[in-house]
Image (cartoon, rainbow, N blue to C red; front, top):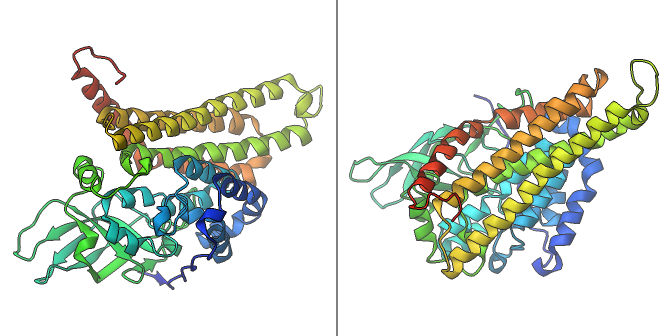
Length: 419
């Protein structure tokens, strides 16, 4: 097992949170597109984005978008986060994946932990990858504290992480065992393993494995439930301390699937940029030989791709609005964010992923030609990244989500699919 040196976590930029608005943060992300494209080869080679890029992200406030303002965050909301991630993905999907899954779990943290623990956790930039599969053992000491041992794979966002969240099998101080618990670890508790970068795509997403050898985990960093399995228990716990921002009242399952959907849409936007350039500069291969932009077939393919991806982006935008409104109603006590809404919104994001992939595979990739498929070409890299998003394990959940949604709807006397 090869471990790599611990990366230094950049300190907060020191800029007052109030100085960064939603529009300014999104504009900063959009302005980085050309730079991120230029850095893609190095990002893939190094299996992560650079320390310089990390500092740019920190200074731009990307890591603080979802962090409560009272703890030094920007608290700009899920729409700002999604638009920022999408803008970064338009330049580099690998970079967006590492950024997104390092920063998005501020929502989970704000929902799960009490205010005193949040104050401790959110000091500095909060970058916290989270994995779902329980992969280690956590032993409770006689004093109630815990020792964690195990290896955790696919920790996207770990190179510059301040924390890590996952699940482990507990052995309590009385020797009893129980279902998996959720734990939060701090930087310095783990060793990062040099095992990322040999996948087909998302090579630069910083998705390394990490290992723990008897790491000390405080008891207030351990929750006696598993996120995603017993979400109701987590939500009931969090209602005591979540405050007055609706995003900390949302459902985590639908929030989880919204992340890769946003990256997929942003990445295919980048593919459309590349396809537009090919259409302007390359010629057809059969007479009459002309620039592709003058050929009716290529214009039709390009326009169709724009329409399909616009539908996927609209689905993301509407999902953000519905998720936020459901969370707001839950916060004010008007109506709980129901399980059926959770599954339904997760499936909308799943459709956005599917539509993004079909736009890429069935139109852009099919008609772009051979040259863009060569190593080092932007179109090839985006195709590889999209193929990884399409084959990620979460795709295997979607059929289950459909069955769960149907079950929830059919419980109702009127059988309506809408709450």
